[in-house]
Length: 346
Image 1: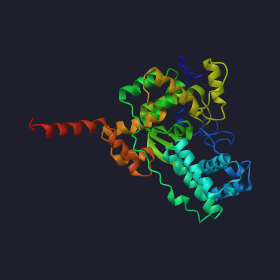
Image 2 (image 1 turned 30 degrees about the horizontal axis):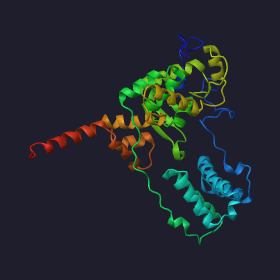
Image 3 (image 1 turned 180 degrees about the horizontal axis):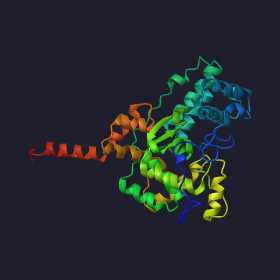
Image 4 (image 1 turned 135 degrees about the vertical axis):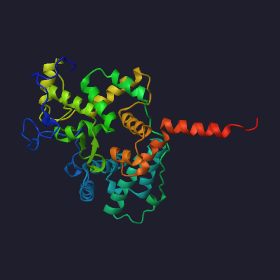
């Protein structure tokens, strides 16, 4: 991938990658065979259901939610219930369900977010679908988040981590995740239609909660994306899957050009696990780059509401956690505390 001339033709990448126009399709809609998200979720209605009650549950989820990922997550929670109990979930008693909640909390040590998702799915299935309105279990369950701060890398650690990634096809998406504060799936699912380079804009489509947003795209990153795309010239994807086979630049470019889906998330995740061990960064992950982006932006003077919009947070309270992580805030507080302690009697 690190060939002297990344383009097979030797010509610079066409500027229409920044105008959202596909060079091979003249701006037409992308072919149906292309998969433009890092992981596709099929609506549970299409699943093979082990019980009739699960088929009815899938129908109810499809009526209530637009996002296939949400439907899949709730369906999976009820499937785990009936796998644990070994029977049709419509036949499960309140006592059995209570035992299952105790099992995942005390023995499986599920995180609060997972337990809340289980609780929401169970409410829909047992109350909305089966009308078990006399059950009191749901009003007894209380789940409180653990007040844990997300891991954040220093600027020096980010640079060391990115330098440690030797291949450009892995380093480029990681730089984009840090430089624009993206989620992993948002980055790998980008298409040429999402890059508005001349306007310094990056369009994020179908983010968390199926929400679109626009984030600024630094000129340096836009230039890197154009150079990276010029290597494979995929008609739609920015980060197509590399696949297996010969590792020569020509073979890589050919496979990437004909790929039907983006690079899988696991490729970058495994790479970061190896890199963090070698660099002795125990808390580093791909999502740490997003946390680091927000923290470093706040330290540089960006407004909290601006960071909220860039990250796509629905609630400002989610973004406020980064106030606890800024080095500048710690230094300012330390100076004030030093001043308070001056002159105190010994």
